[in-house]
Each structure stands twice: as structure tokens, then as C-alpha cells.
Amino acid sequence: MILREFRVWAGRRCLLDIPGLELPSRGLVAVIGPNGAGKSTLLKALAGVIPHDGDKLLDEGWPVPSRIGYLPQDFTVSAAMTVAECVLLGRRERLGWWITAHDRAEVARVLARMDLSELAGARMDRLSGGQQQRVLLAQRLLRDPRLLILDEPTSALDLHHQLKVLSHLRQLSKERLVIAALHDLTLAGRFAERIVLIEGGTLGVAGAPGDVLQSVHLDHVYSIDSQIMADRCGAPVVIAHHAEEHQPVLSDRGAKRGTEPVREGSPDRT
Amino acid sequence: MSLVATERSGFGRSGLTRAAAVMAAFAVLSALMVADLVTGPAGLSLDEVLRGLQDGPAGSDRRLATILWHLRMPQTLMAALVGSALGIAGLLMQTILANPLASPYTLGFSAAAGFGAALVILFGTALPVATWIGIPVAAFAATLIAAGLVQLVARYRGASPEMLVLAGIAVLFFFQSLQSLLQFMAAPEVLQQIVFWLFGSLLKATWTSVKVLTAILLLTLPFVLREVWSLTALRLGDGNAASLGLDVAALRRRVLVMVALLTAGAVSFTGTIGFVGLIAPHVGRALVGEDHRFGLPMAGIMGSIVLVAASVTGKILSPGAVIPVGIITAVAGIPMLLGVILMKGRT
Image 1 (tube, rainbow over the protein chains, first blue to last red):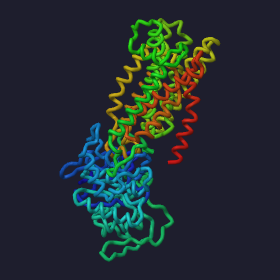
Image 2 (image 1 turned 180 degrees about the horizontal axis):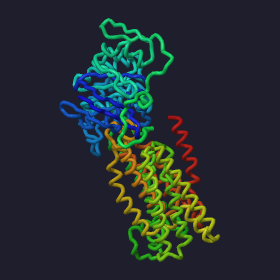
Image 3 (image 1 turned 30 degrees about the horizontal axis):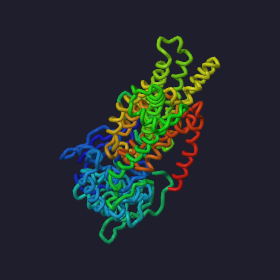
Image 4 (image 1 turned 180 degrees about the vertical axis):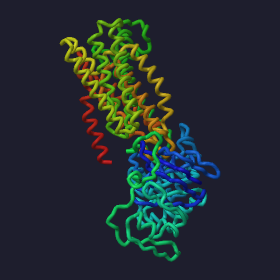
């Protein structure tokens, strides 16, 4: 999968500008970067939730919208429906007036796969944030996505469930491309096959975890003093000793760069 | 909380159970409609009403046929139709605005209808058509203009719930101000007519209004029912619905057109009837859950039940001069609303 001149605009302001980025067609890719760097913008644009300029190319063609599963950051569900009813909505386009035995079987299959069978009859609005997140992930899986995009899927989870979800994503990524924004750099280094560092609305660096998770990159982008060690499997472990005084680079591209793109015919970009 | 129990698979026991709940509600509505036909100043008995219903409008007992088929039947049918239009519009509004306090009137549609009606009541004599046609037509047109204004804002500034509510508040104040201006300009006897129209009463019902509102419901319902799964998905929130491939803004704009048609059809013939569109969706949801396949019919039937019950109550409380249903629903609506709020707090 190749992104070329990939840009996202808010009016005349460029929120994200990726000159070029190549991603594998399968595997787990972690998107990292400080708050406001443009991680969510990149994921939303890839999911087709917000418009973008430029090309997205894929060897076997870009997946049609119904084959892209996107789990946003703000997912809270307050509707009084059951877990099974919620997951069923993943088949929205294929549902007739009556729910068929096939629909039920599909829901049961994906609930079992996500270890959620026990919660099938529980009400969504009474679940914890982490449980809701797993249910919504199950709902996206019902669509059998070719590309699964998750915005901070571990943000509401305790350490045990963070590890479980990431192991699961790794499992799922054997059949599809999974792109997840993550804040925990050590977990990103351990589970992802490739890491994309977003910095100030553009691509900082992309590559294997060992290449990206280096103090030379992280100290500048996150404004920290970091040390990189290795865990017992050899995966990088990031230790941040302290935060520097100055702020990390945000996605206000105009303030940081002189070569930022400007839309044709626009006198100013504010 | 849904009263429909769930089995281990996590779905409501079955669609049939919910369908049965809808049918049971329909049976209650039918009984209430018969009760509404029986009550009234003329004092007909249940036997007489049933006989009159069997004989039809051309029955041999002319007095019975006239009271039943020309006076009471249009009012009863109108109560059921207006109630269902407001109930369905209410659920649609609560879903697209993601707000349990939204109703068909949230976006200023009733204020617009009131202005349209007041305009014809004030200047009706100068118009080439009779006021009984002019008032509903003007109320209908004004409601559609209000909906058009909200649509315009939604198209240019995005159809987010916040934007729609803000646009609706602006429309509400705009038409309320114009309505106040007309009331200020009106002579005392004309002012009285305007105020009476605004009360919301079934006494204005005729067979023509029944036919027009039936046509609007028949026209709108297929479009509403086509969106049941999209509307249910929207209950998961904008972000989730959009990532299920739903064009949320386009859905909101489409539904807004249907709400405008249903509300305009309901209020243009009867005047403003409050609380039905607010309460009916809550009761419907409590009985059949969030699934709009059953939620929409249930909200419609609950709206009819509330309005027909209000009609019966109005006639029993004041047999001589029937109290307008708009007043009954407004007075009864407050404890009902409090009940809903308290129930929500408990769950």
C-alpha cells in the first residue's frame, strides 16, 4: 500500500501532508506521535471518514469502504441495546427486515472469536469503556475488513487487556493490514511489525520498530530525554527519563515550516 | 430498560415478541378509539356506537350516523393520525439529534405553523380561498419554510446535532417573533381566534384533514421504514455510525424532510399539540428497545394512544365545552416527562 502526496485539509489549512509512505498489505502497523501531531487525522483519512488529496495505492486495489473497519477514538455508546444487537449492526447493509439464522450465527461466531460470548445479552450502556471497545471491534470484524484501522484501541484498557487486545490484533493482522494509533511506545515496539512516527502533521520516520524507536527520533519529537533498552525478546523498551521544557511539535504546519503546501489561489491559509 | 427479555444469544427473545408488543399496543389503541367514539356531549351508548359502526355512514338512524360518522369519527381518526405522526417524528428527531429531549417542535416547526395560521386568520378575508382551506395550507407551507431554513444551515455548516439545534432555535425565535407581531396587530376577536388555533384542538378535524394526513403518512412511512437499520446504527453515535459506512449528514438531512412533512401534516389541521412527540418515543423505547424496526411503529402507536386518551379525558372532564387536547397533553405531559427523567436516573 503506497500513499503519495497524501494531504488532508481543513479549509485552506493543511492538517496532514505525507509526501510518500509505503505500508505492507498485511501485518500490524503502529502509528505513533505526540498529541496533536496528526495521527487521528491520518487514520480518519485512510478510513475515508474525512476527505483527502493525493493517491492511495494498493497492489490488489484499495479496499471498498465496506471492507475498511475503522474504530474511532471517541466510541462511547449510550444506547440501551444488547451486545449482540450492537455487533449485528456491523452487517447493516446486508440486513433484511427480519434477522435470519445466518445473521445470528455470524454474530455468535465473531463474539466467540473476541471472547465476548458471555456478554452477548449484556446492555451496551452498562459495559465499561474497555468492554465497549472490544464489542465495537467485534462489530467491525463482522464486516471481515481487508483493512482494520484503530485509533488508540488500548487507551481505555488495563495492562492485562492491553496485552490481550494487541495480541489479538497481531493475530488478525495475519490476514489483513491492521493500522493502530498507539501511545505506549514500548507496546508498539513489541507488537507492531512496522512503526510510523507522525510529527507536526507530516511523516517523521517509518520503518521497523528498532529503526524508529531510537532516542535520536523520539527526544526531538516528544521533547523528552529517553533511553532505549531491549526486553528479553530483544524488542525495544523506551524509558523516558524526563520531559524537556519546550513543547512537542504539533500539527500546525504553517507555523513550523516554510515549504508547507498551499492550495492554489489561496492568498493565505489561516 | 427494554421489557423484552433476552435469550443467551443476546437478541431480544425474537422479533416476534416485539411484534406481539406492537400488536398489543395496537389493540389498546383500538379500544381507546372506541371509547373516544362513545364519549361526547350527545351521550351515545356502546351498543349504539357499535350499531352505528356496523350500519355505516348511510345507516337508517340519521341522528346516530351524523353524530358518529360526521362529528366524532373524523376527530377520533385525526387524534390517532396526529398522535402517530408526532410520535414517529419525535423518535426520528431524538435519534438524529442524539437528544432525549428533542421533539418535532425542537427545530421551531410548530412556531412556523402558528405563524402561517395566524397570518391567514388575520388577513384571510382578503384571500381568494376560504379560511378553512387557507389556514392549514399556510401552516403547512410555513412549516416547510422553517424546515428549509434549517436544511440550508445544515447544508452549508454541516448537519451536526449541535448545528441543527442552533439553527432550530434561531428559526423558533424568528417565527415566534413574527407570530407575536401578528397578535399585536390583530383586533381582540381575531386575537382570540389565533390563540384558539394555537391551543391545538381536534374540533378542527374533518374528513378532508383525515384524508390529507393519511396520505402524508402513507407517503412518508415507506421512506422512514427504509432507514430503520441506519437509524438504529446512528444510536451508536456519529463516529461509530460513520465508520459503519453510513453517510450521517445525508441521513440527517433526509430524515429532517420526513419530520417536516409529518409535523406539518399534523399541526396544520389541529394546531400545536405538545409533549406527544416527546413522550411517545420514550414509552416506545421502554417497551421494544432501541431497534427502530419496532421502535418506529411503537412510537407511532404510543403517540396515538396518548392523544386519543387525551381526547377521551377532555370530553369526560368537560362534557359541555370540550377542553382542547393540546391543553390536556401539555398538563399531563409534565408529570409524564418527570416520570421519564426519574426512570432514566434509576437505570
